[in-house]
Image (cartoon, rainbow, N blue to C red):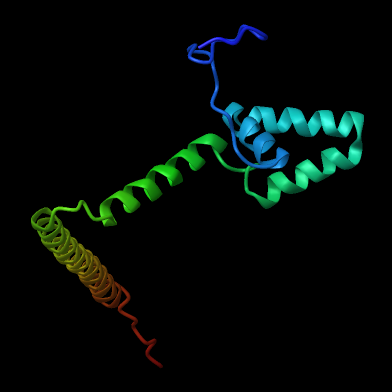
Length: 158
């Protein structure tokens, strides 16, 4: 699709999606797409040209945890995929038999997950108990060795 006044092909592979929201949300999304380096560059430029803007960007980066995180865009993508998956899993398909099967399968999987978590807890407890018993045995053997080696002879009076 092209328009005669601007000659822009909106179906071209380089066409970018339009971000909804106010100018702040659009600029935040634009910087997030480019990563942490873009945020730092914007902050430095803000300090160079108008220092309150740089200070505001620094404060926002620290407050939103962008300063110390790995990648800005990856967090947003992960959370949106997770929300979409939850929304899809909980929605009805319109087929009553499939919805019943899905509910039963989800219930069974949740039960298996609970059983597995209990198994892991018991396994951790058993490992902790074995380590503690080994520690106590080592301590008891060291104490008995120390008692046998330190035979104290009292001096006799002449």
